[in-house]
Image 1 (cartoon, rainbow, N blue to C red):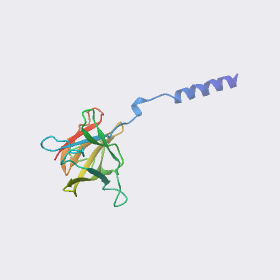
Image 2 (cartoon, rainbow, N blue to C red):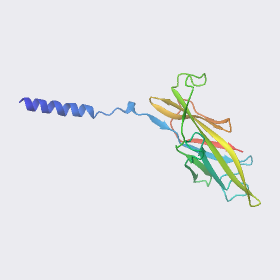
Image 3 (cartoon, one colour):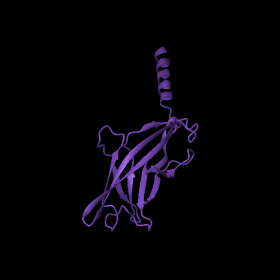
Image 4 (cartoon, rainbow, N blue to C red):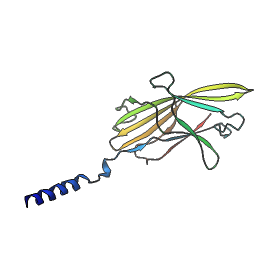
Length: 173
């Protein structure tokens, strides 16, 4: 009889330990879709159009080596617009979490990417070097992009209360 009670107690404890707690999961929001256009609204990532970039490369500024490439895919929308899709890969550094810009939002981090954009002018490669800084906000329940700076100018920001989604950024050059 003692063995039966002990067996039932073990099964009961095992069932309690399998309880799911959805509140303990952290939502992650870090995908960036970066579109580039010029002042006349031309897609600068479509290499087949004159004046557009023929190639690009992305390097992690905080990487462990001088050349620390970051995987950024070139994708296309249904409307035939090209964009760079950054999911993750660059190292993050801690930002001041008690700054007046982010009071009480938890810990903040940032990544910095060096972007080399190549155009061909009269069969000569011309490289433009730009920087993208991605700032993240982290709390026990959320890790999300909070701000994106392109060449030190803010091009995207998101409040802590906004929904988790793919972050779309359009840069006009």
